[in-house]
Length: 118
Image 1 (cartoon, helix red, strand yellow):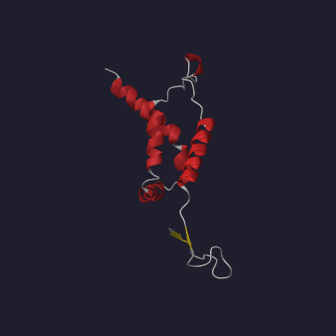
Image 2 (spheres, helix red, strand yellow):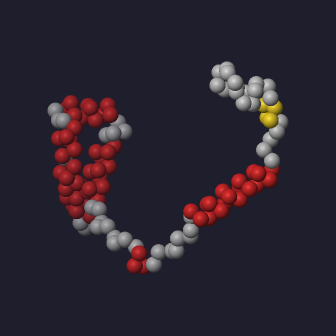
Image 3 (cartoon, one colour):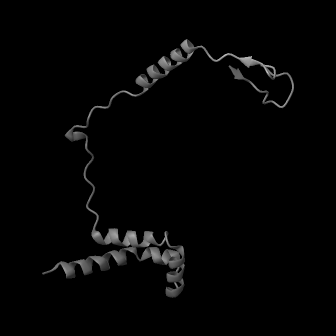
């Protein structure tokens, strides 16, 4: 048996304080579960697997230099003290540092071409 308490802070509450209510009937709970399962089946219908024509066009390949530059600049968000030290040392603003991304990417591409050439 469940005991209901007055959560309104006084007054005429139903059920009165101390009144014990029986648990909900099991058949009522089973009906609720059936309705729930029916609603789930109606809301979610199976999606057919995509055919070859449904795949989106491939994105252009990201250059290694772009990945390197983005990762390098993003890493400063994980080390704010290092970023502040770098900005103070180079006498730069945050926007100026972000504007170096294409320069860093090009430098990495040049370095990669030099070390990859036999």
